[in-house]
Amino acid sequence: MSTEPTHNTPDDELDRLLALARWPEASGESLARLEQHWNALPRPALPPAEAVGIIRDAAPPGPPPVTIPGVMLKKRDDDLFQDTTMTFGEHLEELRGSLMKALVCLVIGTGLGLTVGSSVVDLITAPLKAALATYYKSESVEDYEKWAAERAKERLAVPYTVDEIKHLVDDQGQVFEIRYMHPKQVSHGLGTEAEAAPSGKRQRPAAGSGTDDPDDEQAKAPTLDASELVPIFLWQPVENDARINPTTLSAQEAFAIWFKASLVVGVIISSPLVFYFIWSFVAAGLYPQEKKHVYTFLPFSLGLFLAGAALSYLFVFQPVLDFLLRFNQQLDLDPDPRISEWLSFVLFLPLGFGISFQLPLVMLFLERLGIFNVRSYMEKWRIAVLVIFVLSAVLTPADPYSLLFMAVPLTILYFGGVLLCAWWPRKVSAAEYA
Image 1: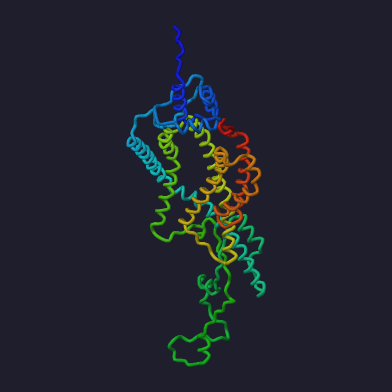
Image 2: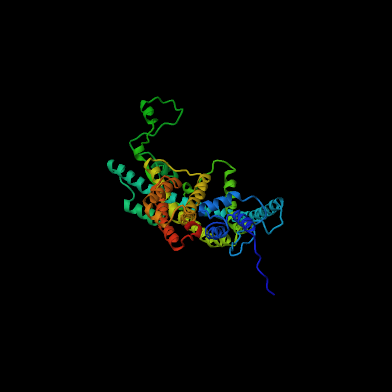
């Protein structure tokens, strides 16, 4: 069965063109076809720009556009909730449900973290204890060298050589404290001070005898002298030294640290389910292409974050602490770190490293928006490296080691981001070429 074509009047055709002109899609190739239909009408043709302007200005609000023979336009769906019947309140209720499920997972994870809270605190304080142990071993060797030099000036003997001290301290992990003891105390402890006085010397008269001999007054004067004191070295393994343990300034601070460590463990354990419930709500409003980008970049982003955090914990903490504690040694100040301040430092530094390692994804995102391209990245690489070093100085403590440990990998990641943008270039639409 065949259908004869319908012949429209010029006014009907103009109405259809006006309806078509209301859509933002009427650009590029669509406008070119619109111009052809406009010129085909039995009226004087106008220049393309003027014709399109007249059509757009004259288009009144009306029903959805109708199809014009020969013009095929694909309507883009901009309504995220077109296929759903949920109201705004129902969407809020769905969000509340997702957040409640995520909160329950967080509580369960924190409960599991409470069982390993003490082990986590030991893990967090391990770099600090190692740095303090290195500090006190170095201090022991330097203190002995100074002490031996002073004894040599007074022509007094020393019990060890410097090489023997270094062997005990560096190779066997021992530290010492120097104390002094008088020989009379040793003889008193051994029970040998009650021996008879040497011949030719009078014994001290008993108290209350009434004797007023001047020699007795001299005998009552102190007979001890500091030069008679004998140095005693008290050795112990450095891990048993109480000085390497962080301190607390209040009774409740230890409990707060234990709970914070358990909470961190709970966040880590529950994070997959928390992200899943939040993602299940957000994904409902994304296009399939946008979901594809999330599935592609999320593992990449997570890997970069974990790499930055692991770098700070395994390679940055120890040099940074050694550098900072060296100033205590130069200024003759004994470090007494608090556990709460150290916990804040431990959490902040890996977080700064993890976030900064997202640089390649940020570069790709800016390239996708058209703000930068591969050529501009390469032309401005010197400025980019300068900015990287400035940000590294802000995000790290005031020491050169942590700055270099952050700036050098970020510089490498910058050029990696350039390669990523070149390997996965942005697709330019036909409208951008028009």
